[in-house]
Image (cartoon, rainbow, N blue to C red; front, side, top):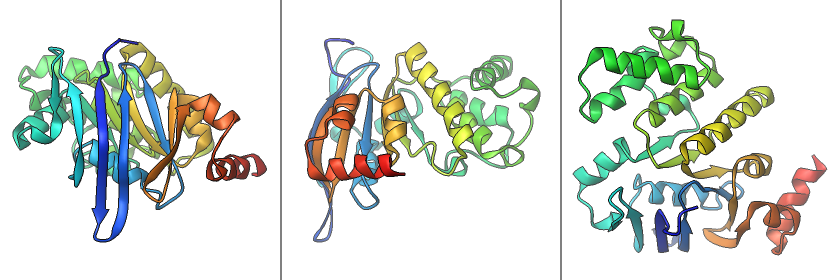
Length: 258
């Protein structure tokens, strides 16, 4: 990993009136690292992900991102236009429901190509070639390039959403329960694909999941959340094999009993 963190987060907090969404979260994320945020429903993990990805405005805290020129920028001080450019180029966001991250009424090729057009590519041949290449990389046959996502299975839609996000070579991708709602065999195929892409592209990923098996398979490091607070944080295998907090021990034991 690089000696310089890609993302530096300090004291990030979000409140819904008197209720805590997330509270005083701090961590560094390194190039090529996958960080899993785990916890039960209502633990604050999705609120934290939305704050990190700027889909939700945090109430306090600082988030700094290392731009391609090596300069750390305070994301909170960026203009709305600068953040939009960041989301189209250097960042990606994979939704649990692929329909939230795809345009269901246009072709698979257009879904991938739109992100290229958003960064200024106007050459139809280049766009279609890139879309064809990325469909192949996510294991979708090129003869499906003109089909709409509504004709795809759930697993294919999720793989298409991943291709749409990765076509601009982002360095940081946020994932919200990307395997949620998929059959076990489809989950395994998707996780295997994601692991390969993360390694090949040296991607940094922040993934929210309630599934500890998913976290173990794909992440290097894990944060456990409860009531909006990070209660345990460390290397994934260490947290799962030797959990220190009683809440984490309960989470792990509940999986083992299934």
